[in-house]
Image (tube, rainbow, N blue to C red; front, side):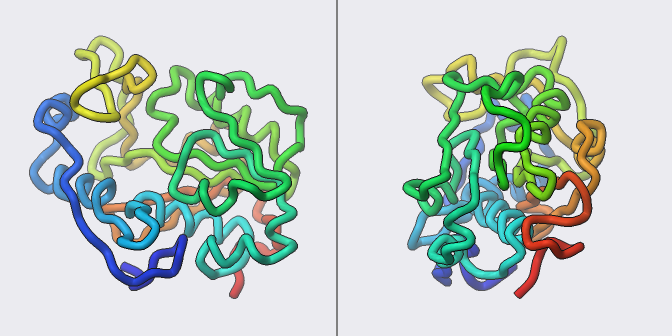
Length: 241
């Protein structure tokens, strides 16, 4: 994996266990899968606290912006600070973007991803992290994210991916919740378990380009989906030094 946090640039990391036995059993995780999901959620930067998933998401945002530097540094660039960013849930990069003039905090339940209250073509970047698995019609939600993006805009997001399986619905299975083992709320109910075919859903939602990013496969994977192959920076790859 990269030796520095892609959010703050720090180079020291810690590890904590996140998964609990009931969730492991509900998801039927093998010991190997439990190990890499625990790293994905529990390996963290000792400076800013971002977990591995959040750092992978930062790579997706760097790709969308077209600049390869820690997010905390990028937002000091006037061109980056002027971008219109829609943040759909609290993520590891929220603290870096919060306070910028065109940042919009749009958390559930105040904002429903199925019906975003914004005009077409409003934002340069839409960000959410480990949210779609809780959304009943996630392809429609992805389509809503695409609708509110500018033609050169990008969606940057993560979903928990079990790489050796295909996506499955939890309909008909016992209820499973994320969050914490205690104090569970209905908004943490898992509707979908994503697998190796997670790449197909942004295309089904109408995006023209989908790129995957990882700090350490298969521990942390993030996705950049754009309207076409051309991103905010105007390059075909969407990422430049």
